[in-house]
Image (cartoon, rainbow, N blue to C red; front, side, top):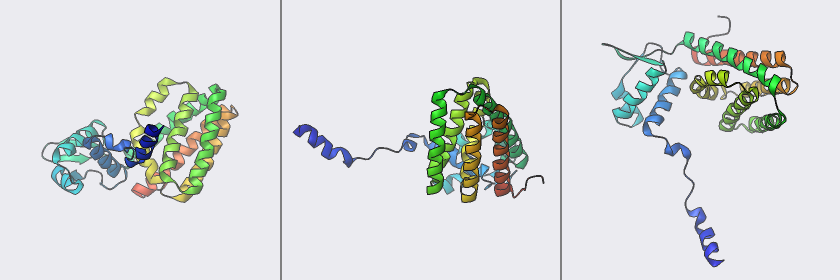
Length: 236
């Protein structure tokens, strides 16, 4: 017992590592640059200087070059002869991304309402309860994580691997966009009510209502993002 007590006494001397620390430097740089682009901090067609970016971030140019190559593979930047690396993300790209996500997510919600099983129903209800707590408490990071969990659970309920796989390609946009949107408390409150409506429609097995509620939610939050980043109002 004494041996165990000794171990218990020492157990809190070293904190658990943050999982993000296990991420490579290139991934950290990639995430930071990607978020900056999606947040509108770099203008469309703006040239990105590798050396300046490295100095601003306090890293060597190697992880910056690697991150830019990854961003180019994602289509967010493009390397042009004599011009260097140019930002390609713009309002048109953002609108197309929102439209594509609305189409995919709404169909997934339709199928989820049709195929929901009791176990997934229970976890969906629990997630909505946790989202209510996070919204009331202003926990932005918790809310973003729960938002992703909510959509993942709907994907699981839909039992549709093909559409879920297609929407995975857009996931790297969603996390950054959600962070921008969730900085607004009013937006968080609106999103919560929309999530409740979506969840209830799926639980009730109302496929058309679930599909419409999801489409409306994605389009409205997308319009909020466009206004925040590009100062573009819906319908302009």
